[in-house]
Image (cartoon, rainbow, N blue to C red; front, side):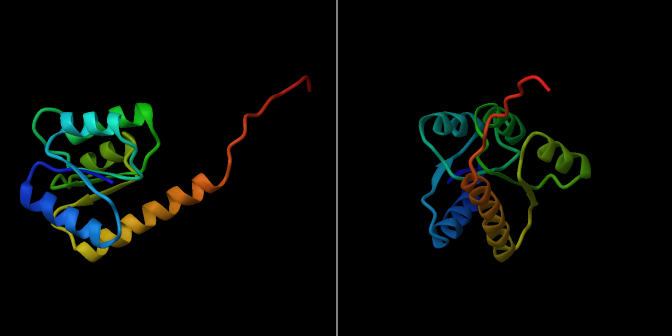
Length: 132
């Protein structure tokens, strides 16, 4: 899992919470570092803060979606409906606003991972059409 969060305390709490769930975690402190790590490694889940220096979480989400269908969970203080909609339209699978309960966060992560694993279990096929 990749956690991109610029606030050290929050990043540490998220990392500890995800490790307690059994995830191996890599951390990024800004959007540029997140994109570099995403390009270098393979992740099963990405957690993005929106308000990061340099490249924000919305842009990171957009760039990741160009390359991958990895599950993305946005965690941010931006809770206006238009921010939530923007995050989801850019490709986030879930959008969690701060402050949040860590039990709820863990449940949402499990739900996203269940859907992701379910979709990977079914092969996709190309459809060919010949004549009528």
